[in-house]
Each structure stands twice: as structure tokens, then as C-alpha cells.
Length: 312
Image 1: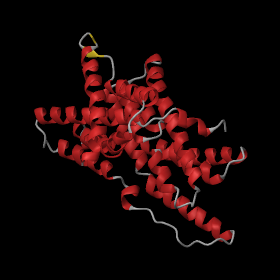
Image 2 (image 1 turned 135 degrees about the vertical axis):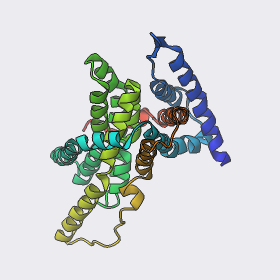
Image 3 (image 1 turned 120 degrees about the vertical axis):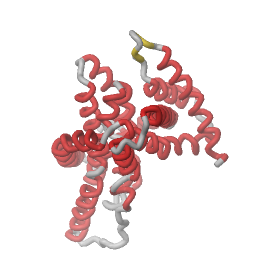
């Protein structure tokens, strides 16, 4: 446990000032600066201008991979099951259409540009479903090479980071409603952490909508990855290759546990399990955990390392 302390300390040194600045800068009593944006930008600046000691990396990695998911699950306490189902159901058709189109179009373009179909598939699932998680889950099933997996992850990270910084600006420029922007962010931004950051930078309501839409996308991981696994198995068999030794899709990859946690908290809220003061406390904890985890995202964003993507 001690190995996480330096990373946690650095994250808290970013999170507390970010939350303080957010509460300090108000217009007509309304907070106009996002702690999420401050935390991510501070993390990126520290990582790329000062550097992060190796002793901090276990803590920052734990925050990104675990603490963020707890914060997202707790966010469900602010919604009712009806709201979750209504928002998710409204997004299902568009989500399914975008997933199919993204995978087919990205594979086609990547192959036309001389890149492998496996790389195109990885970027396609990363773009359309849930970013890095989908890439990592898909890679062994389609037997991609290590460099293809790394390149796909780097590509998703770059475009997701651009979305976090640019989408909220465009949303305000176009005067989009919280619901519309949240749906757009939940549909178009890549990784779960990037979706949550983009939505919350715009507004709390947009963040909640974006999270529900994104979790709806995540539920498509199982059928899409199983389908791709079957497709590449048949392809290898047609080419006379061996089909043995393939890894299976694990349950936590098919249905991430934090998705179930989010829905569970919404069910409890619908049943009246949380008094107003308790619900407010859960919201505060959720917001702080998310800000802290996204500070970790900034601390793990190495701008120079992204140059390996290349023009194509």
C-alpha cells in the first residue's frame, strides 16, 4: 500500500487547489471554472515540464484505473433508474449505428493507407466503444502485434485529449444545451475518462448525460469483440493458419463492474435509499474522486511520446 502514497500525495496536491479555484471563481453565484479542466491541465504541465518521479507512477496509475471507476459508480446516486434507462434507450440506435460505421470506415481507410487491417480494427473499436479498454480487450482476440496495440492506444489518447480541450469550447460557442452536449460527448469522445472529463467541464448535468451514454456504449463491448474474434478466426482458418491458443473474453471486460455499480446506485436512489444530505455527500465524494483520477490522467499524458503516431 505504501507504494501508492507518493502518487496519491501528488494527485491531492493538484486536486485540492483545483477544487478551491472552482469554488472561488463564480459569476452570479455560479461556478464557471471546471476543477476537472484545471486538474488535467496541471497534470499535463507537471508531467511534461517538470516530470513525474517513478515513485509516483503506481499511485497515479491506480487513480486512473480504479478511483475513476468508483467515482463514476457513485455518480449514479444523482440519477433515478428511469433517467438512466430513458437516456440509455434513446442513445442505443445511434450508438449501434456509430459503432458499426466507425469500425468499417476506419478499417477501410487504414487499409487504403497501407496499414494493417488489425490496426484499423483496434483504432475502430477504440473510437467507437470505450477507448483503451476496448483496444486491450480486442488485441489478443485478433492476435494483433504489440506495436499495433501501442499505436492504437496512442492514437486514441491523442484524439481523446483534443476532444477534452476543444469540445467544451465548441459547445459553449454553439450554445448547446447540457443534454445535447452530454449526448454528443458520450457518443463521440473515446475513452471513458475522457468522456467524463469532457462532460463535466461543460456542466454537471452534461457530465451525467455523457456518462450514461458512454456506459451504454460500453455495454456493446461484448457482442462487438466476440463478433470480431469470430471474424478473425474464420479469416485465419481460410488462410490455413492455426486457431489454437486464443484467449477468451473475460466477464469484467464484457460488462465492466463500474457500469453495474452506476446502475445499482441509480436503483437505490430510485428506491429512496439516500436522504438528501447523504445524496449530497455522495455527490461531493464522487466529484472529488473524479477530479483526483483525472489529475492522474494528466500526470500520465506524455506529449512527446505521442509523436510516434506519425502522419498516417
